[in-house]
Amino acid sequence: MIDSAFIIHNEVFLRVTFFISIFLLMALWEIFFPRRDLMTSKLVRWYANFSIVFLNNLLIRFLFPTAAIGIAIFCRQQGWGILNNWSLPSWLAIILAVILLDFTIYLQHVMFHFLPLLWRLHRMHHTDLDFDVSTAARFHPIEIIISMLIKISAITLLGAPAVAVFIFEVLLNGSAMFNHSNIRLPRKVDRVLRCCLVTPDMHRVHHSVIFKERNCNFGFNLPWWDWIFGTYRDQPRDGHQKMKIGTGTFLDVRELHLHRLLMQPFLRQRKPQANDED
Image (cartoon, one colour):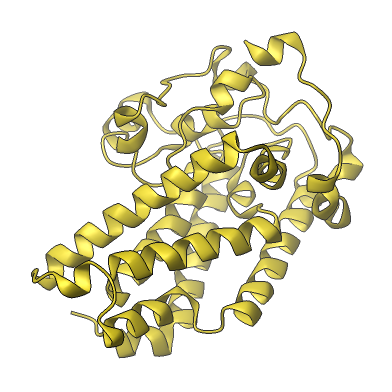
């Protein structure tokens, strides 16, 4: 098994390699087998969305130089956390940690939708006017900081092994790019994949302008939590081709620019129209 020292010394290289590989695969897939026609300029959207990625990565490296894996190693050394005080085979501890960290992300996602102050931050992710691989990384920097603090707390409480944290982060980033991609999957393949993975058609419902659809399908990687807690919705009301993406606000193309995205949490959002509440 890969040891913690190898991971922490090669973490940046490994994560960047996985990120670029999955991104290129999804980007090419979108070009050749798109699910929907895009409504706005991909060039402008990608400039904005990947500017956010660059900014967020700089911020996280500055504020959390050891990152999540460093926290996991520190907790192991100190004997902190449930799994560091529970005699389990290492493979089982890794599997449990990955699953429980994924559950934490599900709960965090629900919280960011239903607490008004947190929704102001998270809605920037939803105000994208189209849905493609670049949407996966479109999160406000303040949300990224809060998310990292939640993740660190969960890792400390669980005593998650460093290997598990690495696997979880790679899975989370990879599955987010996959399930936000504008790719076409055969319906039968989609059905099979939904047994263990959130698919693009499943997650796209979550980006609907319709309020009730937006508040469902919160999973990023594992679909099980939505089934268990009753937040699963199979298909959008208007079908995937006709459904509207976004929140019904910040519709001007100028809102896609980086400085406007950073301002969104501090701007007033109009009340949704009647059909948005359906």
